[in-house]
Amino acid sequence: MTTTATISANLPTDIKDVHIQNYINGEWAPPTNGLFLDKYNPATGQVILQIPDSASADVDSAVKAAKAAFPLWSKTPVSERAAILLRIADLIDENSSILGTFESLDQGKPVFSAIHFEMPMCAASFRQFAKLITDGGIKESESRLESMITPTSITQPKASITESVTQHIAAGVAGLITPWNFPLPMVCFKLAPCIAAGSTCVVKPTELSSITSFLLSHILHAAGVPKGVVNIIFGSGLGAGEPLVKHKDVKLISFTGGSATGARIGALASGQFKRVSLELGGKNPAMFFDDCNIDHAVTTSIRGAYTNQGEVCLCASRQYVQHGIYEKFVEMFRQKVRSDIFVGNPLDPRTFYGPVISQQHMDKVLGYIRLAQEESATVEFLVNPNDIAVKGVSSDGRLTIEGHEGGYFIAPTLITNIKQSSRVMQEEIFGPVVCILPFGTEEEAVELANDTEYGLSASVWTLDHDKLDRVMRQINAGLVWGNNWLNMDQDMPFGGMGCSGNCRENGKYSLEFYTEVKTLSRHVFD
Image (cartoon, rainbow, N blue to C red; front, side):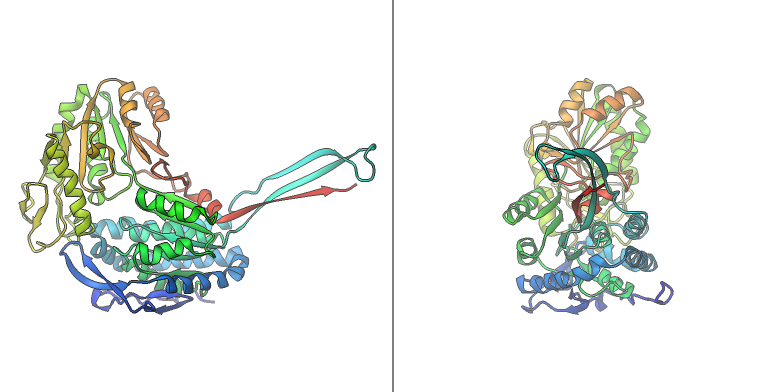
């Protein structure tokens, strides 16, 4: 029997040894069209490797492999599926340093966070669903109904009993399309419940950060995932993602990313009646009342604004502070960012955040900063004076970092004195930019927080427990924190409202998505 002690993923440790190929039916292959895309290091702006620019032919091969693997995998005993999930988790743990280092290089996030926070999350996803299916998975419903039937005569009804139960069965081939801000965690977040439920899949990672998804294919292979159960196709959204969504044999689509792309996916899938899970963007409010623990609140609000370069769908990018503490809060915020936040090389353990993902995305974020300046808002770049790596700040906040002059770095940006109606307050920026505005009453705070098309998350800060409960219940968001941010229970549902999506994921909610439910109703004869 193969054990975790006898398997090895043999992952490369040098970027020069990484040659990304599609993973189809248990084998690696270049794209059939022979085309590749340049992948840029966001910290330097230099090309570090190429990824396949896959097209519909590659997608079709991957879907065929997943479809062929489905009958056997869906009938594989739960114990065997769980054992494979646990081997995957162990291999992720064994290779966490390699995976985290490449994740940092590929995406721009701090290497410490990638290794010590995100890689354990990846392993935990597989362990969570191994345990969940071993413990019984989704609890089936049962009923016993006494009724009257007429077995032989219309005029002489007879009492009977009908027993009904539900059965969850694997749904089929899933298309998993993942974002660039948390590349490997988001793949694992979708992949683990999919294969735990007995479904098979084609994964399409973002073309902007594909390295760790490729390395994961080697881990899946080493862990004994059968051929065709998981296939990974690399390429652009238009070239590979759209054919995957439209493929007739793909029964369900799980997508995490921007709202505009989510709307496009929903439209493409609706004509074929596919099941679609959309986890989209956010413009998340945080409300700080006069009676909050201001030291804790300010520290956490900074994390909520700038973690992962602000490239977090849950970032608290709109912060509302009650008048009584507004000036003190903002000044504490300024001073703490300037003293504690270091921006620069993501491989430097001192770095709090690194570059944003791409030139295009940097231009988008800087465009919002310029818009705020044009609208006469107060825009401050809170650069740490002790950050000797920072050699310059442009008028719109771009940083020049010594040794990384071509990187996509943006200063920690604070915007105040801006109108609630501004696009800067209403649209997702997805960068190290936060707006802080004052409010007066509890009712005004709720109104401001709900004044958005999004509804992913929010946080409320007060030591008054009644107020906390009252306000939290009035916020239109799928996830509302009280006196904390980003504390996640992996068994609780996660998802948004409005332009933030239509799904609920995590735990049994994810298993339900990757399964079909049947009702089995039978008559019990005397």
